[in-house]
Image (cartoon, rainbow, N blue to C red):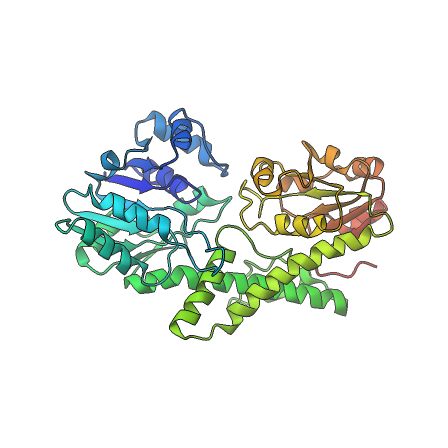
Length: 436
């Protein structure tokens, strides 16, 4: 058993802390936000993540998982300190803003006792580990420590599953001692997952390179979807045929409104910025960023075009989270599409099963908020599906047809059965297929 201190209790820190506690470690999560820590200590989760609640309650009750605002008590006898604070994009340059992680490194440095591995879980630009090491040595010259890169690959909505079933665990370490500590921590995964030990800068690059590649794959299938609509092909059939090629694979071939969330937009922008910094021409990434942004604006205008004959008519939006299974609205394509529609309409009602409260902090009073699908769709000119919540696969379409002013659906996640919606007489649009 190890003592692990995790700094940051967000979408990375909290699931990681719960997972490490479940593996038999003693985990202390640290956060500066007193209200958040108070809630967690009362047994109240501060974010929604599928499967998190049960393991959270179990490990808190067992004493394996605790929460504090006191950095000293968490760090002073820890074997591993994990940095899991936010690295949001700078509002002007779009590069990763490292002020929070550098501040955390400066604070934790004061309390290091004995040999400690400081592991960076936050996604940070190449070379950040070097800077973190310099900060700690400046604050505490006598500290016995190593800084390693430990990138996270948890998908929001599937973070708990991914923690226990990782494709790979990447450890970027410059010393054998740090490498051995991390291999011991992840011993339960030996034989189950690939554990890759690399240079620290290679590890920092792996996370960005992976996310940028996946973002490009999403953009590519969306471009193919646009082509299919023009050429009278079916993107679902095309994607299936492509995915059967083992060199391409089936994942991330679902066309939709574009990529979003807390990782892909931030990481592609940061990767592009790093390319400019180091003098590398990352033209594919630059194009992907620009065209993904353009796609969301195009979809918003596409919906507005449908109500141009009755611009005062109600638009129902189903889904605000950037994807199903999470309440996270950061960089959500749905939110960006709604913002585009707001430029042309003031009669928009939105609904999301989990993300409404987070959406309110972004959209404020620019839209109306519904508590059910029925409320959102009643008397609507059009219903727009923007998030792939499982609930939306099973909409009561007969009822919707009765309560909507116009039987019109724009399905940007291709969730509904074309045969069913057409049999019921809906005017239906989806992605990557021309509806006749």
